Image (cartoon, rainbow over all chains, first blue to last red; front, side, top):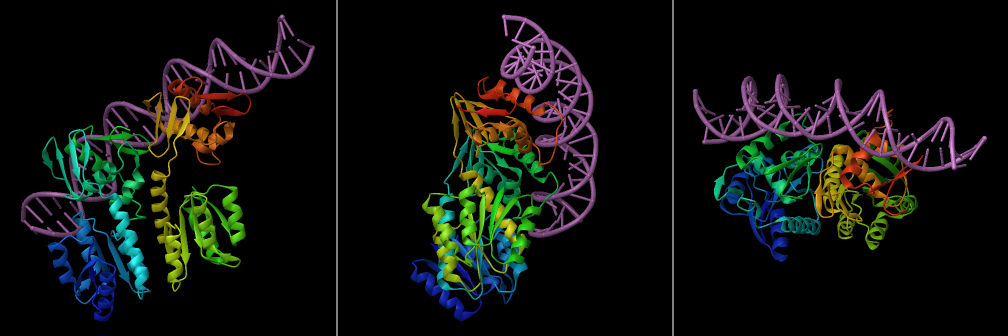
Length: 219
Length: 219
DNA sequence: GGGACCGGATGCGGATCCTGGTGGTCGAGG
DNA sequence: CCTCGACCACCAGGATCCGCATCCGGTCCC
């Protein structure tokens, strides 16, 4: 598993990298935000360990950039002990977990392994629904062979719906998928996106379950 | 959703309980390991918030007991910041997530909601009654293999009835299940919905117990 | 500055729900 | 066995709620 460690303190970074390598991972190291941005563009990582305080900017920018591109690479953020709001912001921006400095290397490894296991289980090669073909890894959708371009939000919703074929997905759960945890949105944003999705994928691609949510595929 | 909060610090426990109740959950509180053990034996919980340091023992014992009994109730453990090995042990013992003291109540709520939604989809034993098959996770019902579509109220009633096969469920209890608690409806709304249910599921799906309520399955 | 995207607002159409009424069923007591 | 009262099933109409499509202003990135 290839892991990117974004950390500016040299000593800590070295220790982390060594520890991860000892555990059998392929590890790259970036000590600035710029380096990290370049690295994630150059190569897909199985996981990113991200310190939020960097000499040339906020680590959150990297995370947001990923998620805006619907890149679901697992991210484990690292914050200082007293930065609670930063931590929450990180989780809301799509981080998978966080570590509080200073952290124990074994705990770090345990958390990383847990996240990798989780991600591995959910990694499905390709999902088909009638004429639709959804490939999560490539983040592409084709309809009867023709490619369909989706916006980030649209993709997030489709991804969540297609993840459990035949099962009804509540609107609250979809909001979690599109926005961060805990965000309360009082609007019909989800409905609007579903409407747009249907316009692109065909009216019958997504089934409405009145009073509950939505569903893909015959249950 | 019924939640058990296991926490011995009175002030913190009160704050947590209040916050969860404000979010619409039914909350029980245990301040010792003994109380907690008794509670989980007495009643099924949707989630347990478990402080690992308790006056009369380790919270981990409770978690291990659950998992030994193949009880998959989601558990969110709470540890002190410096108790790293304890945290790891908790995750390995089958905890679903952890919080580090002191934690932000909104973060707690966000994580709890995420876990509950995740568990709701996966922990889904389907229930069978003759030709009927009810699967709560997919929110679907099939009758002799054919899918049946239910409205929200109908589903709420069927869900409640099928929870306790063979037992009579009072009409007042059904009203609580369909509407919020305390809402009094002076009508035969429940009877009307049961009537519709019977039309969809077969006349004998729901049995009337005159003067008390309704029952599913063999009494 | 332009375009894409997002999310809030609005009005419509339809599914769903409550309610009242009517007729049927049950059970106890005479 | 019959009567009576209580309870229940089912139907139909109007009121309500929900989801859909669409428009529009704001924002971010190019």
